[in-house]
Image 1 (cartoon, helix red, strand yellow):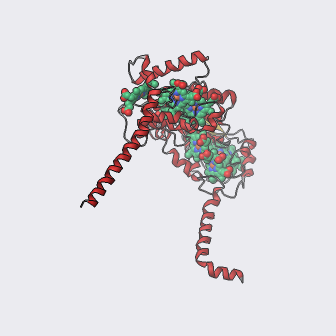
Image 2 (tube, protein in one colour; image 1 turned 120 degrees about the vertical axis):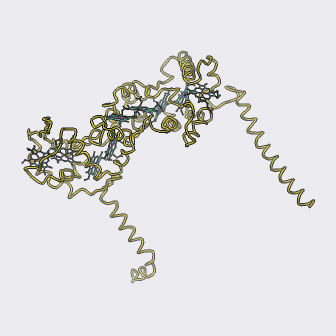
Length: 374
Ligand code: HEC
Ligand code: HEC
Ligand code: HEC
Ligand code: HEC
Ligand code: HEC
Ligand code: HEC
Ligand code: HEC
Ligand code: HEC
Ligand code: HEC
């Protein structure tokens, strides 16, 4: 009875609610919890044994039109431990293969085979595919860099796909397999050393600054202007920086100074600057960032100062060593460190509101006069 009444009273809200739930359920269920998995796998893992009965220990090979060969053995354990091992069946990806003998394969060579087969990933992970289309790597592929550009399979593999997020060092190894110079340089930086030697999980890996799928680089518009944001993700995180006894105000002080304040405008889309404006990387380096703490107390100061002037001269040609003193480093001006700047700042802080107040008062009095003396 109560149900019937509920139905009568709440019908206008219940019907849309049920419809929306069904819609959402139907939309999300096949994704099995993965963002962007668009196609439901067929009856999960069915028939895998049929294929593995031959493929788990065969010594057979496939032969491509150019004469090159490749083994067709699929390791049972590697497969079952992979991210798809308990979720997909072989034919989810090899849909054209029903039994043996297999249909004739049309790849010209091994790379052609990988590129053709690799297209299957986008059936289920369409969101990732869409992202890769915005990447510098996709541009390489499009412009004929068939062998050079990485595809899903080059970075993730095909049957031995592991959780791609950890261990984090694996990400660098992956990118480093092609970008070996950058990777070597990075491994010697303050970030890289912490990653390799201490297994530190707080330091950045390649994808924190470049992304994994929509990989961006300096050739892309405004990459330089926006690069400070990737540093800021960590270096303005007070809690994270406390662990390493590092100043969390590096971003604020940068945005307050002459470089940061103009650079920010360009990063927001105010066109392109005539000259590149100093960003974190121009003073600290890119993949070779070093700690100022690794040298002795005395040497550290000198090195830091020397580095600053050298960095300044990259853009402000031939300036004297004292030029760097125009810069307040990453410290908020105080009465002690920079009395003049501090004084001017407070002068403005007090005088500007007073002027504004006077202005408003002036207008109000004017209006009052107009009204009473009309
Ligand atoms: C009777 C043994 C046997 C069975 C069962 C078998 N294969 Fe194969 N497969 C082979 C051999 C041998 C080759 C090497 C090339 C050839 O002879 O076609 C091969 C090659 C392949 C290739 C590479 C060539 C291509 O066409 O892309 C794939 C992929 C493949 N098999 C997938 C499967 C799948 C999926 C199943 C299960 C539906 C399966 N195989 C079942 C024996 C078998
Ligand atoms: C997630 C999709 C996917 C699933 C599931 C899958 N494969 Fe593959 N398979 C691929 C891709 C992609 C390639 C091409 C790999 C390359 O060129 O490096 C491939 C290639 C092959 C080859 C050719 C040899 C090689 O390793 O390049 C064989 C044989 C094969 N698969 C068999 C199987 C069998 C057996 C299963 C089930 C246990 C299976 N595949 C499940 C995507 C898949
Ligand atoms: C038939 C659909 C389907 C195809 C095709 C497919 N995948 Fe998947 N993929 C899935 C499902 C389902 C999961 C598991 C989600 C989970 O663990 O919750 C998954 C998981 C993954 C993960 C791990 C995600 C994570 O968060 O850890 C990666 C990486 C991945 N797939 C890459 C690939 C690559 C590369 C290809 C092509 C070689 C591919 N997939 C083809 C359905 C598919
Ligand atoms: C240049 C290497 C590279 C290429 C190419 C690449 N990936 Fe990834 N992918 C990664 C890395 C690294 C991660 C780990 C996540 C991160 O660091 O953001 C990842 C994460 C994933 C995940 C896990 C979920 C997530 O986003 O965290 C899936 C699924 C995935 N990739 C699928 C794909 C598919 C599908 C393609 C092809 C369209 C592809 N990837 C191409 C490197 C790559
Ligand atoms: C299969 C090889 C390969 C892999 C793996 C690879 N890349 Fe690349 N990458 C290239 C090629 C080729 C180019 C274009 C030529 C160049 O500038 O080096 C490129 C370009 C870039 C650029 C732009 C360089 C510029 O000068 O504009 C960045 C940034 C980049 N890759 C980052 C990454 C990251 C991050 C990863 C790992 C997630 C990665 N790459 C994995 C081959 C690869
Ligand atoms: C802390 C952020 C950060 C990390 C981590 C990082 N990069 Fe970069 N990378 C940059 C910035 C910023 C630039 C562009 C500098 C400029 O404006 O010229 C760049 C430039 C590049 C370039 C093009 C220029 C060149 O030097 O060849 C490539 C390729 C590249 N990075 C790859 C990688 C790879 C691979 C890794 C991991 C080993 C990595 N990066 C890690 C920030 C980073
Ligand atoms: C994913 C987080 C993360 C990102 C992104 C990041 N850093 Fe760091 N950085 C750290 C951590 C954590 C440390 C401390 C490492 C240690 O001392 O072991 C560090 C250390 C440093 C140091 C050494 C400080 C000292 O004197 O000891 C400098 C300089 C630095 N980072 C600059 C940068 C710049 C510039 C960028 C951007 C291009 C950047 N970082 C991006 C996390 C990050
Ligand atoms: C104009 C050059 C310049 C710019 C731009 C710059 N830095 Fe620095 N930074 C330095 C110098 C020099 C030091 C050395 C320490 C000092 O002078 O006190 C330093 C110190 C640091 C430290 C170590 C702080 C500590 O507690 O020891 C970090 C971390 C850092 N900078 C990150 C950044 C980040 C992130 C950005 C961009 C938001 C940035 N820097 C922009 C020159 C610069
Ligand atoms: C990557 C290039 C670059 C580097 C490195 C650089 N600057 Fe600048 N700097 C600029 C540009 C461009 C402007 C003009 C900004 C504007 O138009 O708002 C500027 C402006 C200034 C100004 C404001 C007065 C003027 O000349 O317009 C001072 C002072 C200054 N920089 C000092 C420094 C100091 C000190 C360093 C080293 C610690 C340094 N700069 C490093 C590019 C750079």
